[in-house]
Image 1: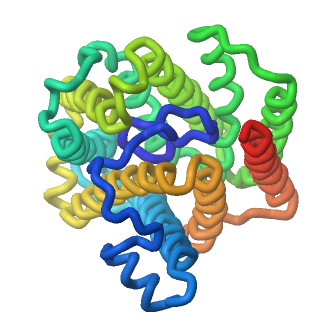
Image 2: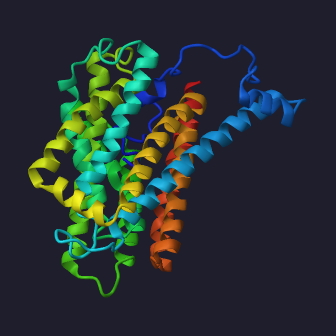
Image 3: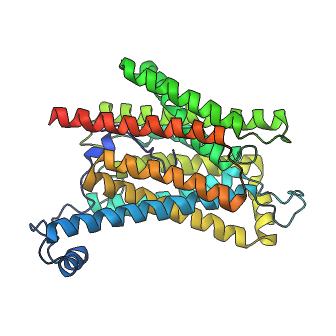
Length: 374
């Protein structure tokens, strides 16, 4: 789960997020060219002969730029916070940011605020319209918190490109969780795709290993990433189970975001207090106040990216969204390698190419399948 706000990115055309309705259930105009909206007027000015096409293209570019700007910034800030050596403190003598849990907390804090505003706008109240009790979201809130914490913590042991490619292998635990929690039967094609993705991830990870790195450090990073993909897979399957239990019409994505993050903010707060991380982070931020700004930027881009996800899926569907996010992963690897100096050799590139090749094949397969159902 790249967006750290309580919901997972999905490549599935049947994902509940794909069924979402506009935040404000009021049509701006019956005109497909955008009517009197800002984008509509811009489309009419740019292309007066074909305003409908230009309006659609303008919306697509807004979605593409919004998603790329949000998540490329989010990924960069994430790596900056967890890998930079800042001014040391008594509790963090190595100068490293002392708490991955605080990073999760800051994202959850803003996500709860955004979710409350969205639910209030759409339903008129924050919690009264909820059919599912908050306790129903607790299991996936715990797994979502663990996956986010593992994602941040792993950056101390593995590079961001390795982490990004490794995430693509979560299709395997997703399928396993689907079988265990919902008894889903997957076609043979998906198992073959999962196999080749795993091979590509293994090639990239082994080839990207620094010759001077310690095996113990690499193993810890691998364990964190396994914890991430397993927890993240449970989150998505449990959310799907909630939609099936209470009905898609009774839980929209904003209510899901609110339910998960309301639980998660309690979990992370307790964790920070019990572990003593609050005191360590407070001391660290006094010496390095700019790190607080980094955390705020991370939280803002995480929330803005989540809203861009909702709008993109609503306007263009899950397949277009998946293409944009897959391109984002490739951009992230390039930016991280350039800015943070990660070396990627030819063998690693072949492994990454295999992974992204299979991902784009999945997109094509789902596109053709969707066309067949139409």
